[in-house]
Length: 415
Image (cartoon, rainbow, N blue to C red; front, side, top):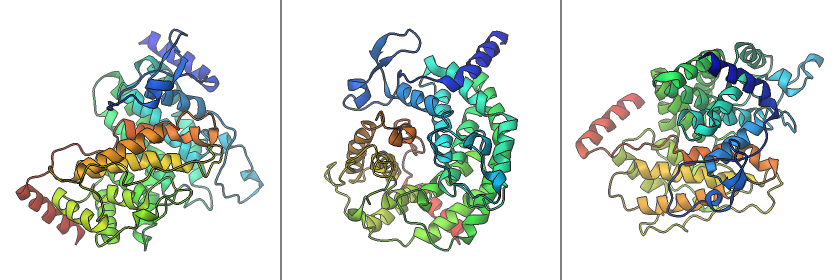
């Protein structure tokens, strides 16, 4: 144990000078992905040139940016001259990866891959990076920033949603056995003060929200609600579960004919239509959701085709706004898979949903290793969310009788 801690301490001191290289991964597809076909990178263990799998490349991208302070774009309310400080002084944990929310989901990416054993050769390095940042004094700095005047809406809802995804990940790892579970619980305990503030911000905001936010960018409510709900269920927070479920049903239960043909907008990284459906599949029983989806997206094909939803195109990957379309491909991929897994067995739309998901996911992954920081600082997290099937419901569809009972319970909660 002493040797392990010594190694961790040494690596922690080295973490700010991470270099870029890639290693190995896990998603099975019918053909090799971009990384299996194209990516040749230094092996950090043996310093040899060999083909790498995606998860190692994604972990390397995150390791290289979670402590990279510049360039930086901050959304920062200043009330006095004392607020003019460099990012690491303002938010001591989540200052890297260009902006606060990208730093958060960069840490989530590392936690996800460390926790599920996708990158065993990099686990010590990842643990050192997380241990370096998840400390009580640094979290206290984050809490102080959140409590500053004029910051009640800071990173709401997108960054808050990703932060809860991070603590949900740690909660699931901590529920296991062994050294990883103990370490995850330690980090989770350090993050609890900030998690409490984030939860309170959401609990205060959601009841006051009169309308859904139907955008394709950070302020969209459907994507955030989905992650809020995942956190609430993993954390056993029944109050938050009911709040998000009730508000979602109130906003979206009667929605019809979503204009998906108008998507994507020129700077989208989230599909308004598909993210709403991905939220509702978390709430409705299978047969109820299938009926709702028929009304909401009536033109999903039943012939298994993939091209019914055109892949987003990026004409300039150096443009931080235009590169959002690489993200819309990846987020569409996970939403399409989520929708498909929630439908009853035998639903004729499943094949087309999954075919389009693969088309979009493969296109999105080809863009992750762009040499342009405008995209690379965040796309790896989106690719990891899709590749590791985060948030999917893999349980079998309910039988008719079970479905009816669940539907009655759902309606009772919403009344």
